[in-house]
Length: 294
Image (cartoon, rainbow, N blue to C red; front, side):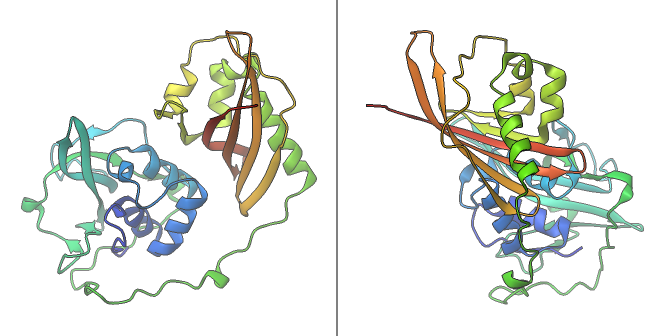
């Protein structure tokens, strides 16, 4: 496992995921954009949902919550660490790094561009606030050892990005896929599905998050615990469209029409990102933008 240097000031989370997955920064950045995660968004340094969503997309699990750092010995073999944790106007911000332990060797992969060496063993100078374990089921991923003679990537040195033409191309969208996604998307507007903890647990991916119209970000836990209420959705929604972004990622767009408590119909443009898993499609991201109808 080698460090990956971040290419944006706010790109440490993307670089950390790239290091864990053995991919280039640009490859993970491209995947992030397909999930609605933008590298220059400062919220990458203040929210865990973005990095969790990326790791979940690549097959890694990140348990809910953050674990306060106590000692290097107590860390799991692979973890994301928050360092340089601080408050700005009451909002927490931090820098993402990766902790790796393998065959008795330990190191920290730090994506900061200005470092002389991005593979760090100066643990006394690194002061983590908390960590998130990164887990691959059934030990499906082998983590390579930290090498003490690792040659750092020098500032300004180009990194060997894999050409985009060599990346797997998108699969054709089957009629069954489109029908499944339409059924799943519309089911989320039915009270018996939307307010069923069991059903929502099945439909939402572990890294799910939503950009609410109020500007608030909701994670999977927030969404599942929403109190039951009248939805008033007018189905089917117009403008329903499905486009594959990759072989395992689909973008669904449509216009929602909801009857509000004022008895008026309210319209919004909706977008959802679904990921294909061995258990079917799972929702990883949603956003709604209210629109005015003349």
